[in-house]
Length: 105
Image (cartoon, rainbow, N blue to C red; front, side):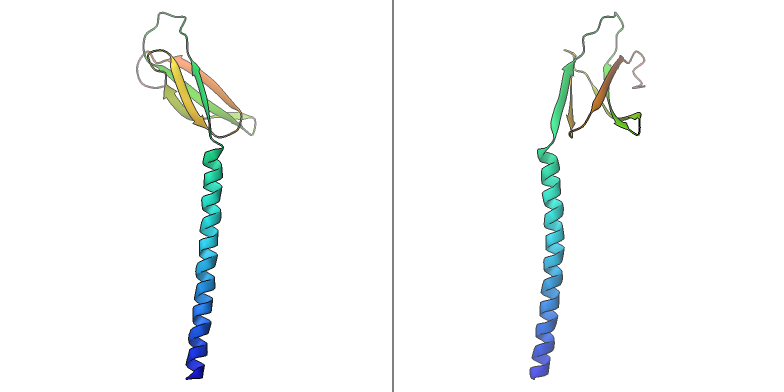
């Protein structure tokens, strides 16, 4: 009887330790995600067209990686020319163009 109790206690102890280690990993990941969200900022601006071209204004956001600018997202400026990007801390480059043929390219 005592041997069964010791085996059961040992298994429960090992199982508890395993569950706690999984929970600790998840808590660390959750904390990292919270810190990432807390560090999010906003890049916003206003495009003023100095052309008589018509069409939506597409605004691209680029980041620098290995001396190359990489486009990671885009937005359409609203009818007032305003645009906005949620962004993590870093350096970004913004470009814009009038999409005359409405193909987004």
